[in-house]
Length: 339
Image (cartoon, rainbow, N blue to C red; front, side, top):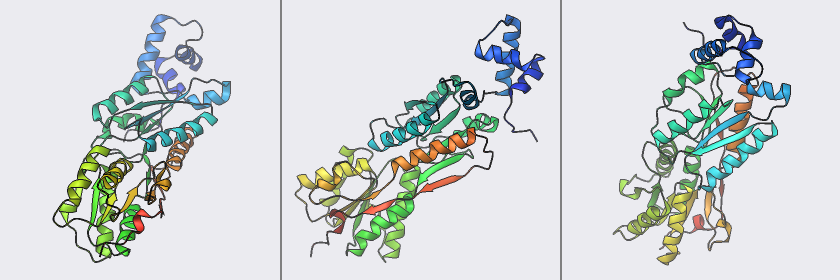
């Protein structure tokens, strides 16, 4: 069985037949080295998948060129903005720099960004995976010891660290909250595609809450909407149906941003609403928006700390950390069904 130990500077030096100091000169472009030796060293570095321990170098010489790569789906989404800000705060405290890019929820773009980050010899990688992506392309990097942590959604096809919210339990709490107020027809407006981890977990929580409340599952009440406009259209269509819902569970912040104005435009103050993710100004709406709030800052902080732990020598098995969510009652989720 092949070793998965991360290659060291000494391994490169031994394979090339030179001293570790010579390898260091090549990698740091510091000092005289023949072109032939430089070529051999770089070839072996590539062959072994060697990546310098930049964090150790930072601590030793005070260098500031170490970077952590972060890939998010959408720079404009406030949730991921908070995640990124928290990651940056943690890594900056350790003398590292955050390098960030957006995949726009596109698999090829995620792959291209990660490849570009790896070419810069980043010392750690954080990824919010694009829906449906297969992350076996990172297996060599993972096995070579590069710290890789997946955020918000776990990897597919790769065993790696992950930090996620309690999506299923949070959705169950939100929908159970509506059912406890007497609502029997509760709509679910969720993300796309159906393979997206967060959507699957939140839909599972929705169905669990219905079962626990003794309510049947009606697929006509489950709709897909990835942006505010589509969510607003979906809400209007549901409420104009012959047997409309009396409550809506908006399964992400973008869905809430579409449902709230749609209800206002329809003058439907009788429809209860619980959103997954908090929103700016949610408390000043009339009524205030009841939400299942994720802790985006805690997600980013936990993921960054996990990368730093791996850089610091933690070689334990891959693990998934689940960050709790909490229900915040503000009024919209406490409306009773119309009589």
